[in-house]
Image (cartoon, helix red, strand yellow):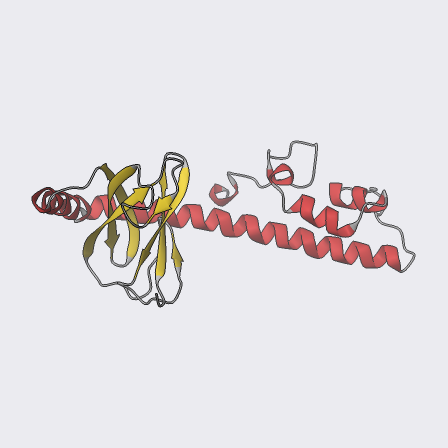
Length: 207
């Protein structure tokens, strides 16, 4: 079968993979907002047929239990995966050409493209900040664990400020504490008082 890249879209609440050999074929995985290695400049629209069985899983031939046929259109602008559209059924060539033209015109609108790129950048910055915060907490857990192993106590005059230190001091397994820090539970809320330090959603706007 050889090498390929994978684009991921959402269909009926489930992530679906579309494999392609059009780009670098380096087993890259791409989602909306990602820049695709090996893509061309300008606005490019591609299509593929996506066949699904009765459970919503992808099949690769009509004889393999195909219960639903769709046509998927993928839009790249300056190499960035900016949009996709899913049409029910297998479309004729004329209908496909019409959708290709419509999507090209839609994404040749510089204001639309700029708005998408700015929002994508903002989202990625927030995600990076969240990941950095989690890594800092993991490093703190490692340092606190070493202190406990050396027979030292945690906390200063103000006591145990962070939930992860409270868990370690109570004898919880450090690996379990790290797993908790990386979980959605530890990240939910904003200075809720029920857990560790939370991300401030307005932090990037404060001077």
